[in-house]
Image 1 (tube, rainbow, N blue to C red):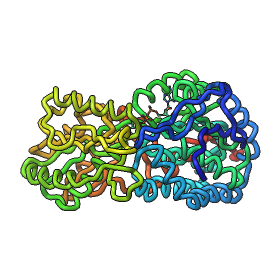
Image 2: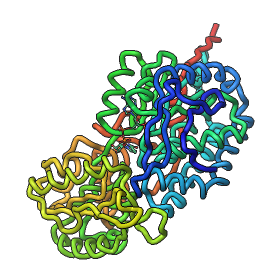
Image 3: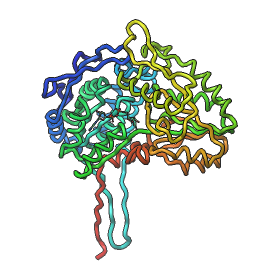
Image 4: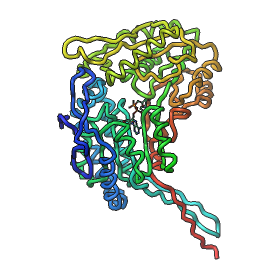
Length: 485
Ligand code: NAD
């Protein structure tokens, strides 16, 4: 399994060129060199994909759960069989370390298919009995053709997180990966073909957001959109989909607080905080970019945290010794460096990092950056309010629990929050009051695929995960049968 020089779309079970016959470049961010060409698809390709999906829908939606399980589980197994090739493709495409793709991204893509293959065997609906009058029961029916659009930070991981539940409950899908990281989505098409997924059940369209992505959102036959990406893109998609009354699930940006109390398990907290700050170069929507520390341990935390951050090695993503690889693109590096300049203008003290890293040899045109820790900023400044989505965190002290809560809730975002404390009462009290869709207490990024996943405020609308995803991808219909007379 290899990345070809030119990727294709996967429509109706065939690998096809885009209608325009035009392609654009996909550079490897660790070297700056061309990795492959991406089809510049537009609404004509999307129309073909929707037609193929509509054709496949009657048979796929009626397939028995055990038969659907077999195919979806074979896709899961196909991902596992090709783990090494997929992990390498993911690292070359996104700049993330190979060890990370191997241990997190690709195993999770496998789990996504495995989880929803089995979940659809257990999915059930409710009944409401009106005594001696009638019985209501609920049908959960697949929607038809649905659209799934995903970002570049966890490419195959998030692509499959949407596609697997959509397919599991009987929909046919038109999906688009990010144009920054298109490779593993292309390879997934090959795995689906081998697993015997009927043609048209999953269609993968490559291309940019304005042409290919928007065409999926605007197509009248696409009845639901599951989107993960930036908040501004989410707002644009909502404005297009709402007047057409499409179902929408929006998983958007974050600016997550990491709240540290003096009574926490200090060593565990510092180690985890390095990961929650700089994991995947800070390019995880759940990273804790605003670190709030109880004043009495502020200096102790700063010393211990900086000591560990300074040991992080940034380098070739394929080298096992690299803790951090390249950023996802040259454009993203530029955006983050610009944020550092803004932070300095706002009065930030740079405790470590802040600069681009220039590696030699074949990596000289790669997009590398130092992990950066800032302090001395006002909580309302741009650096503490805007999502930077890179290896940049700010440190801010607090005196009381109330002050920490106010600061934590003081942005327009509300994706996740982390609390470090050994006071159980405080943990529950804070968890209830934090404006976030996900709260971690004394841990970070622990994920159970059955739990609801999503954000509040500008971090999104709706929830993914477990039954939530399966409910999103189905329409509920109540049937009321009177029998009283
Ligand atoms: P993005 O919004 O630029 O792009 C995401 C996807 O949307 C891409 O596939 C893109 O091609 C497509 N797109 C762009 N414009 C479109 C349009 N007008 N119509 C339809 N599709 C369009 O986001 P990104 O830069 O790829 O990803 C980073 C963002 O994603 C960050 O804000 C991050 O926080 C967020 N994110 C959120 C979660 C979550 O679960 N909440 C998870 C991962 C990433």
